[in-house]
Length: 169
Image 1 (spheres, rainbow, N blue to C red):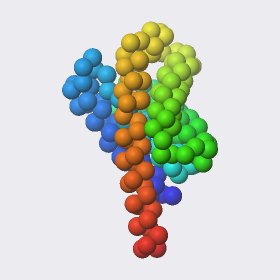
Image 2: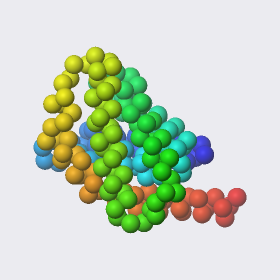
Image 3: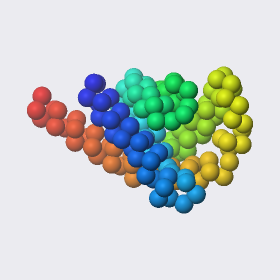
């Protein structure tokens, strides 16, 4: 389980750094898909809620370290997303396009809803318009479009890693 969590956390943290530095500059309107969150959802769906929670915690801490949010803000949100994604493991066939699209949309909405709730808790006074704007809609659409590809790549990598462990172990 440690290898699974490390693989997920390291790759998602790498993408979190990439999307906060490079992708925002390259894409129009400074809207980038949340690739780290989609990787977390895919891995939690593949491995379950406990690895999803742990990976979500480390990914969230990484995002907290590179953002201006209070420490633990993103960690809480990503733990919740990892847990909820892992709880529905085995409930769906993972191959259709509809499942990654639906889960990416739900995770994105969960992220923004809990960001609003936590901003009230932390008394950030950012206002609802910061969270629910046209930029949010574009991020949601970008996540939906990229989710099937990211799910396919993540599942392919995890299947190869798990198959390699069975052969060598």
